[in-house]
Length: 100
Image (cartoon, rainbow, N blue to C red):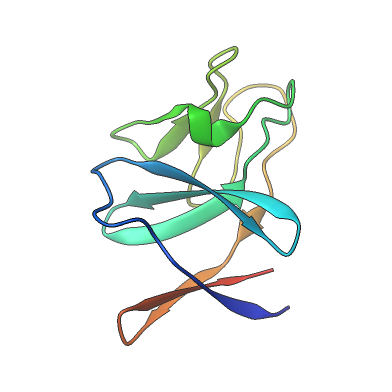
């Protein structure tokens, strides 16, 4: 596992989902409960980009295609499909790092 510093657009809108590509992996980054969290930017049901969906007040990323929900904190899908991969995030000295 390698930690990589990421840059975010300024300013980041509230409840924003940001699409990143880090070392060839497409990642959906979101801010929930005061923390940055990241899951794979691919719905395991039909492959849609989760970063094109929306983040609920309960910390779920809603797929824009069929409405499947994935918990941002652990990638768990609320439907009968595979969970999304989770990427650890850490913040140090005002910078954000993701492990891939």
